[in-house]
Length: 130
Image 1 (cartoon, rainbow, N blue to C red):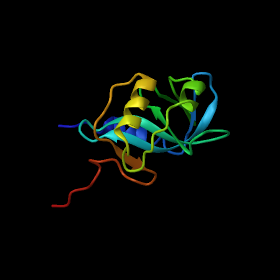
Image 2: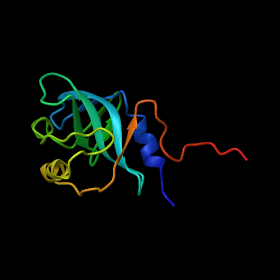
Image 3: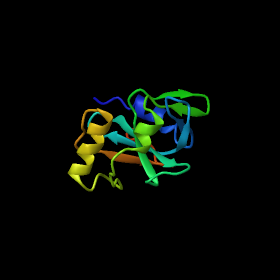
Image 4: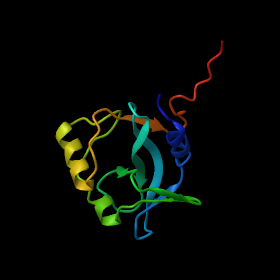
């Protein structure tokens, strides 16, 4: 049995700003990238503010904490802004890029990820009519 409680809670973070460990606002959370096997968040997708090499930055969920109208990451602004290139649409396009991202942040790799876009309901929240 999978527990979707955490994913449901984190899905409410979309639209909130994401701050680094130094309390620098890096952008707005637009997507939650999760592992469909254990239904747990892996990355927060943010639309970057200011100068950034990428339109969408992926920030590890690990250590993120909600506080009012913001979410605070356990990663520095420099670490987030200097992440290696990784093209993520409906999934990673390149396994090498994916591995570089996991290595950069020092997190455990996940093989198959899904995206919870703004307006999408978390899996398991469907109503079954009988």
